[in-house]
Amino acid sequence: MLFSAIVPCYNEEENVEDFYNEILKQEEYLKSNSLEFELIYVDDGSKDGTVSEVKKLIEKDKRVHLISFSRNFGKEAAIYAGLQNAKGDFAAIMDADLQDPPALLPQMFDAVLKEGYDCAATRRVNRKGEPPIRSWFARRFYALMKKISDTELMDGARDYRLMTRKIIDAVLSVKEYNRFSKGIFGWVGFKTKWIEFENVERRKGETKWSFWGLLKYSLEGIMAFSSAPLLIASYIGLFFTVIAFLALIFIFVRALIFGDPTSGWPSLACIIVLVAGVQLFCLGVVGQYLSKVYLEVKERPIYIVKEKI
Figure: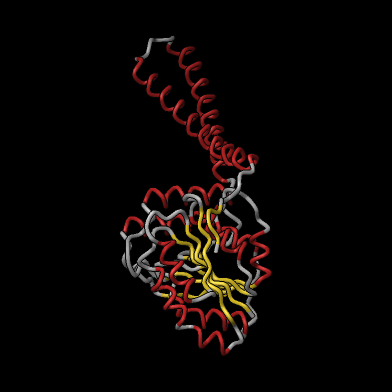
């Protein structure tokens, strides 16, 4: 049997060889279970020497492969490209910075080969080393997704998971342009075992995810797997309609009883600005969903390959 390790990379030249060496430490276990492996580095338009480092590995080990994008298309595109090119009976997605420890592979394979699971997925039990504000927002995101989405999304879930071929094919059958892999993995279903581990800080280099990048990514996930924002916008519109109707009754009754004294304009101006702001917010929510439809119907490729070895 063949195992495909998929490694999305963006400016990870310092970690390429370290990751390769860590995978080699699991070679004995893989062979004991009749497993060969291939290592697929997916370069997501790196601006450093990531590609050169991977080519050095290819020269000494033909099990190493490279897919290099023409520009930065994002991690989601890299994951999709890796799965499309994986020839294995099993595949795992792993970060090059070693925050996804290859040492967990024996435990993950035991779950699939011996315990009958279709997938072994990992989740962090803590966020040691992360800024507190980032950890707080991450937890709130997962809690929100559990309430507004039918898709299983585990708190602390990583993209690091071992999948059988039938799950790989199921994920590849979801060809949408706006991809949120954590949601897709849950949406396709199958029997999954969750493996918990302590947070591991990256081996070398700096994270490529900024706070705003993660916030944008979380909004992508919400819009990809929940229509709740549209429902909320509808409720807000209904709420302000009721308020306006009640206000109209109040003004009419007051005019009958007390006459129609002239009121000050500041309160009126504030109300107009408030209502206009709510309208623009609701229009923005609808616009975000419409923009996703726009990108889907254009049917642009998810990624473009510059070089493949």
